[in-house]
Image (cartoon, rainbow, N blue to C red):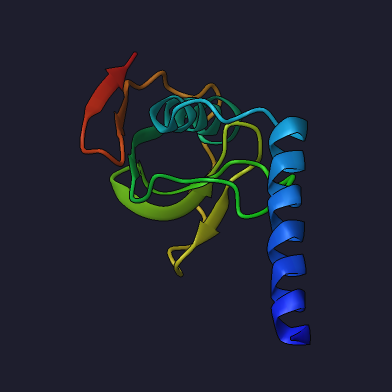
Length: 125
């Protein structure tokens, strides 16, 4: 009997957290918009000589209050780097590929190819 009561209480508590969380945080924009914003933020704020950003997953928030982020492969000077990028946070370089070289000053203005996790792509000048 107490196990059933505990189960009901747990479900009610989790449901309440979900409802409260939805009220505190508005829903995220569509995945494609988040990925595009992340690729541009990565280029504009961290790596101006990136040639391509290819998203390997849709992305999301790893927890309540966490920033949206997605796994991607960034091609810089012909070399691939595994990254986790966000539209408002600095990148994390993962997978043992190291960090890319510093961009030359002034950085070249390269077209950026973005390959979205749904397989579509676009070139941003």
